[in-house]
Length: 292
Image (cartoon, rainbow, N blue to C red; front, side, top):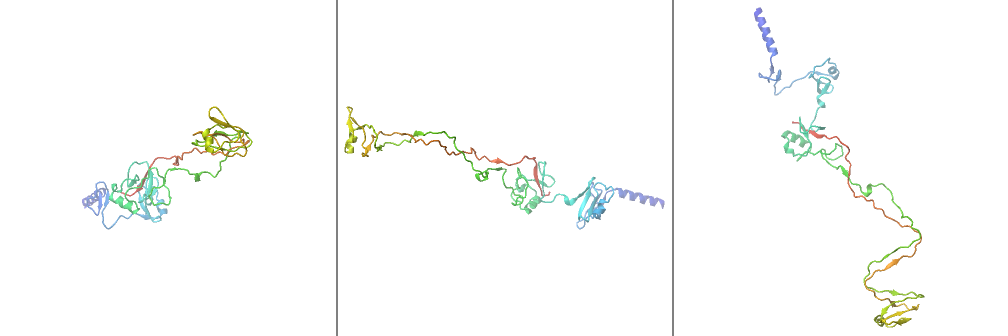
């Protein structure tokens, strides 16, 4: 009898140290316990937050269901971690990873058909289609546009309306009592009528000019070269036509205007070059959680 009892105890000890399968006779080699079911799950210990945090020296990896937060928690060796705080579909994060990882998909503008079928379905549920948003050189902001859309620019060009409300005025330095001289524009072939009583004018002209005018002006005299001059012009004679001298300009001098100033216009000298408004930044990649 004693031999039978010893055999049973030894047999039980061996069974307890082996792998255990519930719902299966062939548990996975890497698992001490494997539970298989198509209609039932594993029920973790349930307790309040006070009870959970009251566990003395919890083991790393210890799992409990917190009825106060209605979520599953585990102890990571230093503190309790809420599974509910882990990534959800559609979450956005930044990171220095260079490619997709653990369900996080890099927002680099690539075609949606490069993702897994399930990832495409999740993206479509958020209104993303065709291509992923390209977050390169973009900043996260709640700007009222469509979710996951990229809009705006990192540069701005100022217009006149963007300038301060100010009036720029000025005057040239006073040059004192002075006049202005210059040359008129080229006027082509033409003549001039003169009426200036009380002065003496000398004018050379040809015989044909006088014949065409129908008479000689007062004070007319001739010369040996076939040209004629006249001296003092009668105040009442107003029809003198000066000799047509062909295409020419005129030198003019304005009346002395006395000491005065001049209004000036000053160019801004600008070229409407866009201003880069992107601030100093830390380079990261942007990712969206779409699962595996």
